[in-house]
Amino acid sequence: MLEAVYVFQGGRLCSGVFSTKEKAEEWIKKYALTGMLTVYPIDESAYDWAIRMGYFKVKKEKESTPEFIGGFSSGSQEHFHYKNGELIAHE
Image 1 (tube, helix red, strand yellow):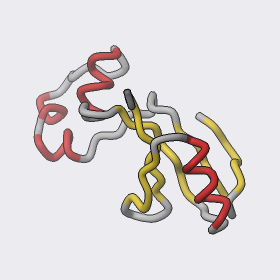
Image 2 (spheres, rainbow, N blue to C red):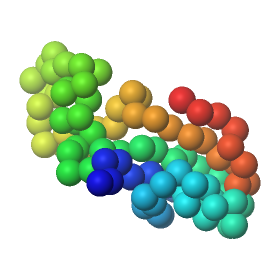
Image 3 (cartoon, rainbow, N blue to C red):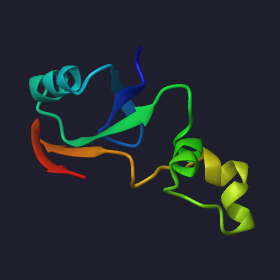
Image 4 (cartoon, rainbow, N blue to C red):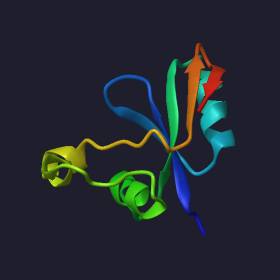
């Protein structure tokens, strides 16, 4: 069963979603893309995942608003940075 997906973002919006890192990298290399590939859980938001994993704790009221939750991303999610199709950093 798929537990996570790999989401590529080269601009303001996501431009590809992949079931494996290998498939994502094949596409990134094919088009010599620059951007970030991030691992996202399936059937769970990044916000809920980060709270469940203990990576994030709500400390201020604004951190439970729809605006905050809708734009939330966790630095604890695995990230891969690419430049011209080549991996340059892994966080």
